[in-house]
Amino acid sequence: MSEPTPTSAAILVLNAGSSSIKFALFDCPDHGAMSDRPGEGPPRRPRRSGEVEGIGETLRMRVDGVDVAIKAGASDGDPYRAALAPVIEWVRTQNDHVQLAAVAHRVVHGGARHTAPVVVNEAVLDDLCTLIPLAPLHQPHNIGAIEILMRALPGVPQVAVFDTTFHRTLPRCEQLLPLPHAMFDEGVRRYGFHGLSYQYLSVALEEAFGTRARGRVVAAHLGSGASLCALQNLQSVATTMGFSALDGLMMSTRCGSIDPGVLLHLIEVRGLSHRALGRLLYDEAGLKGVSGTSGDPRVLLEAESHDERARDALALYVRRIVRETGALVALLGGLDMLVFTAGVGEHSAPVRERVCAALQWLGIELDSAANRANAHVISTPSSRVTVVVEPTNEEWVAAHSAWQLLGDAARPVALR
Image 1 (cartoon, rainbow, N blue to C red):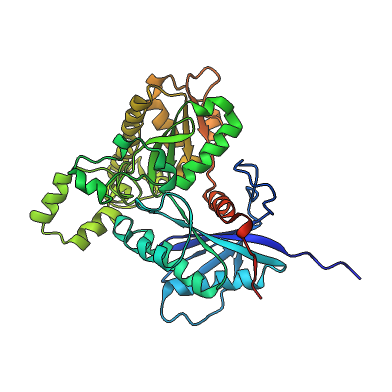
Image 2 (image 1 turned 120 degrees about the vertical axis):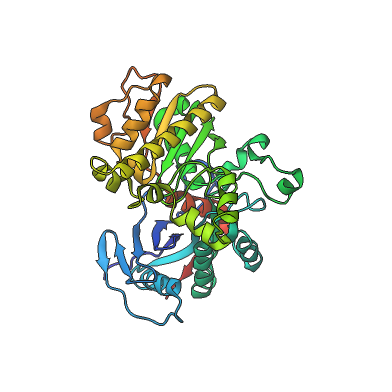
């Protein structure tokens, strides 16, 4: 008789967006002697991973790159519940001999109160709901996923891991806004975002480059959302996003930094309502707004030879990256390393080439062949600045954070 397969503990990570839900299942090892070292804890690669797309429309699910049939089920007319139902069913039925130690949720905004990962209870949930106006594209979906999983998996800790946490090291002067000080005390301040991505880079860069990574680094998280972060000694010292995820760089559909006088004009002269203004700034601006066609740089790169508005959009997109990089380099007092990550940063050689060409004055020498190949290091050996393409791993950061937080208190729960 064969020996039964031993049961193992795992952490489910959810990254809940408006149109898709990404999920990953990470092995959760015993703690033994607790350690903060990045080599301890869940492995970098998940046991399994997948995504549900088409929320509110036709749902599509893929697991480990393979399409998975979705069973129709009751959802009370809630498209988010309908989208999460197949994920819950998959975890329960398709992962034999796995017990859940926790569900780790990427939550965009932690506000002034939540500066570290936290096990979510009703009080925490209520507090996170007050932050929805600061991240309306993300926060409602992050919270909705937590609420649904709390009910669907009773007894399994739901851990919120915040994008704002990594930036808690920002100097006080970086957190301040030029507004009456009472507003700062009320939470109107610069927070910074994409923290899970930058936290992963702080680990991966030190592993790959040692003490050089502890120098003056600018990391560019370029995806549908985009930001830059200045790191020194692997800590955030400045970043382009501030009070909300609208700030800083031009993005796929978000405007980035904009003269507040324009907003007053749109309200007072054009008569835009609060709702209409929010929709414009979050959904109809950025690359999509300037080009009039798409927020995807790949589409615009293909069109720029015959489409002036596509050229305008890409030129402004690159210029804003270059301008903000220069500002962060000034704060750092120089630059030792420039890092590209996230979808555009990892895969768009033309965008990286244009940014680096405009920053040649810093001593950047790009290796064109390495850049076209999306190599790890895309600068020449003689370049004064090391230019790196580093794939991000936000899911692992969330799993590792939950593993550290729960420690020996984790009690894996059987799902069936």
